[in-house]
Image 1 (cartoon, rainbow, N blue to C red):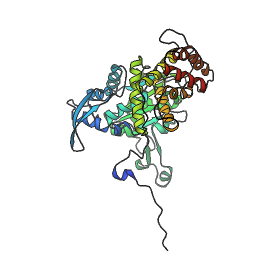
Image 2 (image 1 turned 45 degrees about the horizontal axis):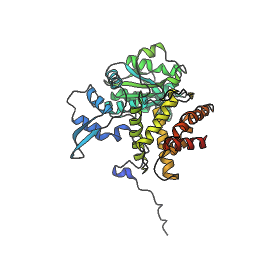
Image 3 (image 1 turned 60 degrees about the vertical axis):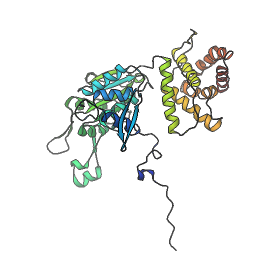
Image 4 (image 1 turned 135 degrees about the horizontal axis):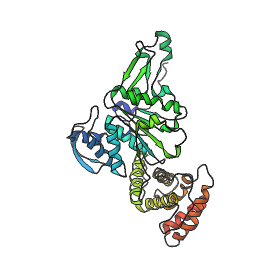
Length: 389
């Protein structure tokens, strides 16, 4: 009797639908309609090997307009959403740098959106944000330049087809952008492998006959990121610093902007996780207020507070909002309230240093309790926070 074949799950990718097969879509896929609309409406000539002109790249990142375009054979209006909330001049300087021969280094506190900006710039400029090197203590020069398929080298010797190109080499050959995350996490010897790439725009391959060189095509450049908490871990050499243009991304300056960021990103994440839970504006405002006051060590009415050692970035606030929505969905009534925010605050503030719990207790006692006497939302927040602590 013939054995019945094992049942297999349907493959959505067979029909071009990848939304259920990957956890997070890269920017060029998620915002493909916006990029296409900007390309169709681009009236300026892009630099060599750029998909969009600098003005259109800026429009993609800062958003704020709606364009008519033909998508999927249909004429539609495509709203261009804002990807970066902050000084538009920061984005302009980044784009100008990438159009030059200088590399770009985005510097700032953890969670300020450096990688987010890097990803969207790469998606808009060269069409892919996937040419990425993640800097760690274990990153080697091979990760930056190239390596070999050892089995084939033993059988056939070093040949171009036996080489395994790094993301940097792929970007050079295509005239694309390389994203180098957490550059200062790499040891100095590895960092210096970038010096020749940035200076000569070429990678030497001495194993090949004739001292072969792989030259970069026009459009090639590097976007690197480094957070200020890692300064001094592996200091960049003077030679490498000189080849980067530094652009500092600060923590969000005002609460109104921070509320917008948390609201938009939380909504996108809730959509990705297919959560019916909703975050009301008052709850998001309370969350942003708590983060801002603890981060600054001072309340809006002038009460001084102990600052925790943790960086309470906007990204952390978004994480708390998502965790609160998940908690409400699975263990609550589905509507996110101040108590859900409080239950998920402790893990965001208190990490390695248990002394940070003191800062959170102080905030609960001096601020939340006092406000809770007049406002039920703050009372719910206070009671849940004290319970967690």
